[in-house]
Length: 419
Image (cartoon, rainbow, N blue to C red; front, side, top):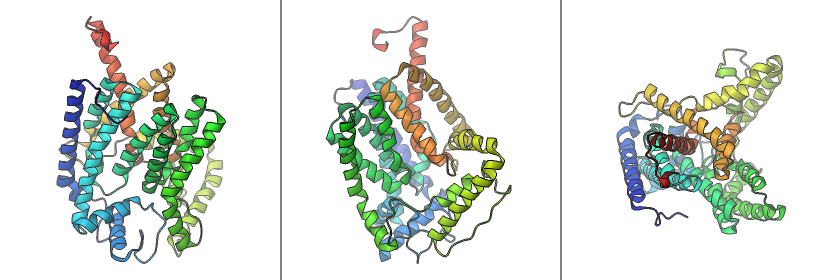
């Protein structure tokens, strides 16, 4: 499953070189640009990255899990990133741990590249998988993301691993794969809560693969049990602190409210809301205000809101790469041009593959569409599409491979092995 033992020598060498170069550049990126790429200020604590760092410091010093305020426990974020940061800070110090964590993210990037190859090989073939890896090597967001103290790099790795395990689980119908999938699903959820609804993708594939109801029930019980075992410490902590069952977070109010403003323009029809005494109260008020806005302005401008909550937010999710600060003298324009090229080629190839009914391709396509839909009710932007881009690169790679074969065929150089 994870072995490349039976691959041809040139494939092994090519993959090793790709991963080495990718890891080396990622490592250089985190050491060279890490301190320059902070999104927030340590003085103001005004963005996610510095708040995650402060959260890890407080956890390490006093055992308290916080985010917005040092004196207020939080359920605004999932605990995964904070605990990972605290682990590295315990080993290397408060600031050394930040650098060590970035190095760890570079390692995750190299590991993710291996997973990209494995998924590409499983869905398409080894040659297409290598092309997908090469396309990822030149995607600038892959070097920007690990310089940040955010969930993107770790979540991308876990998502790719989950997708790969899921393909085997659905195909082999083995409880072992579903156990492994439940474990990775739980770990991914501790990083980012949107993956909690991922079983919807599995259900669709079960229907396509014509699973028996008895098998669906059996594998659901197995996976849910493992997922619950991973998540239970978080659930217990939340119940002790808040005296209520909180399965994920209570932080969707603000992104939901922001998402109700067309083109995120809060100058038009701004709706005030009351800031609560706690972050939870504020979240509830923001959620109520967002619902109020949809009822009032959604009825007033139904076509505009329908367009905004479908095409508009999808465009916001995919229109630019997650590349917010220039690195290696690569401009935003060049990074965006490459990004759009990948998307166009991937979309074109997706239509072709969908017509063929290739089921493993359909699985990764449904996964991409699923996350697109999950983000539509909220504030969407390029950061959320980043973990999905490796799968888009693989689809684009299939298109590139197909065009290469046609070109060689046109010049009379196609070999039987290329067919």
